[in-house]
Length: 159
Image (cartoon, rainbow, N blue to C red; front, side, top):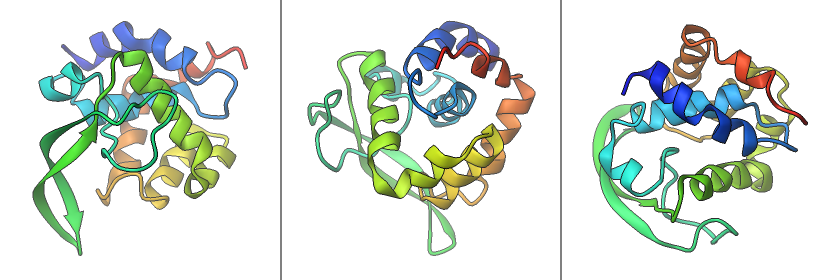
């Protein structure tokens, strides 16, 4: 599916699962596109895991501890490497999206993300907080937000 088709298909999920939080749907959608390859990662999509959350940490109301293993690109000590890692698997896409929001809202390291008020500042905060190891994570998210006019999703949020 194309990025635009991905946005069309999952936009309501991104808006619903950010309502009542400061997390912006535009940033959440950009993360889902980037992390899942716009749905092209069959392992991730089969596991309802479009945010590439590693399979560690405490269980949440949305994650029961199930994981799947997949290769992933990481930047370690300045070098791009491919590793195998466990990722969180979910019963539904809604659970995966809600768990992503839950982590951003409840882990203290993501406080700067919660305090950021623009898509650009949230994207930068995600990178600075260590959501991903890619050195261009924020700029990749911002590029997707601009390219796909994802700020329109933020206007659909009710609270």
